[in-house]
Image (cartoon, rainbow over all chains, first blue to last red; front, side):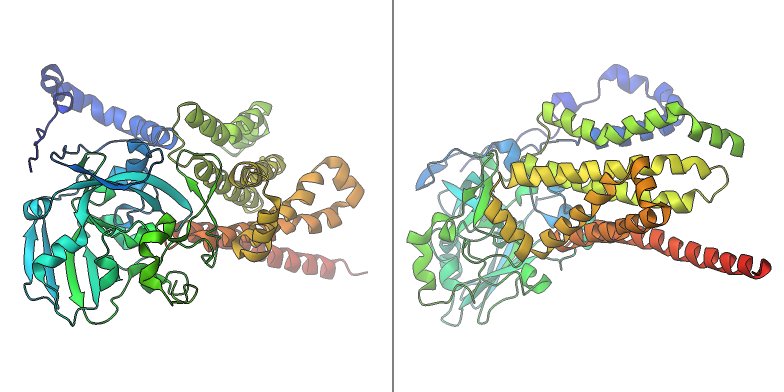
Length: 320
Length: 213
């Protein structure tokens, strides 16, 4: 597996020499202009929200998987500028702006708990642990919008195999990175951080459960949960935890951030289900980003054939 | 200073400028639309933007009464009707976007939502309350109803604004800072009215005492 490194500074980001040489003159004028420009900038920000893209790195040697939804893919721009990543702000446009300087290297994922071989994985090891596949999945947010994204990664089971869960392991607990210094808006998100989530072991080992390192042929942009996250296409988006740092195999049902925030509205399973409404809004339909008309939401987000067996005999209304 | 403020506020040009300023939020949305910058979910974006402006205009309208007690600001009363009508204008846009774009005239679904989703129920109620206020905002209607009854009717704006704040509070997932800020501003504006009402009642009583019979 090869990762081509992009230079840290692009030519366009470097300060032109003449501008650099005029900096004193610039500084003198600055104090005068400061007041006016501050007001102007505020006005400008109000009128034209900024749209910076974090440079991503091309991933090579990716194999196209047969898990592939044959529907038109959401534009990269939309999937990277319309995000829920509350550590970086609660507005959909916040993460793209505020996660730009998020440090994702070096990165370690600690895997422990009920396993024979607990260990830490460096990001390099994660990238090489199994062949990378591109899978085109539906992604349905609990808020009622959806997208089609080509993710890159491999089944979570590949990682689980290496640590060898013991028979006591019945659930998997996931934890996101949280650094209030890098994520100052996290404290205002109204949810408890670090973000945690969990799956039953059989759910986590289902081949659809994707340990994800990239999208659209590249490494994950910061705002989409870099450098490694889960993608669980049959569950509401918030179950697909971002910027993973810890995975624990455990005996009992682990806590889930949104369930802690409001147990009445968000359950442990949170499977996509058009017949079980969110207490405050209907889940029967969804708006696919880029489409005008809402479309009907599918049971298990259209993955019923693959995953319905996991929930056989369960009351999905109770276990929402 | 006081004279200057009054002159500015009484000028026709100020009123015309304020009118166009009130249209700026709509102009911004049109500009963003033309430049394809209404985010990946334009309908949600314009719904939220117009909703925000309903609350802002309602609060501005409610701010007139306490503000005009300050020196030089008495002529602000000339702007109250316009601000209130703009609140209604943005509420109408907000409501129309929900019907025509978000739900695309799915009347059954919408009616079910009005009954079942309490944030929609209360938002819808707030919008309904604003309709008679917008209709009776003319001088003719003030005359027809009589000042006192007209004023009583127009106190419905307190309930409409409260409904708007609750509507917003009930729909956010976890970050309640913005609806709470609107709620706090509304609470301050309503509190100032209690104060105003108590002092005017006291004044009335005193006047009554000094002119017996």
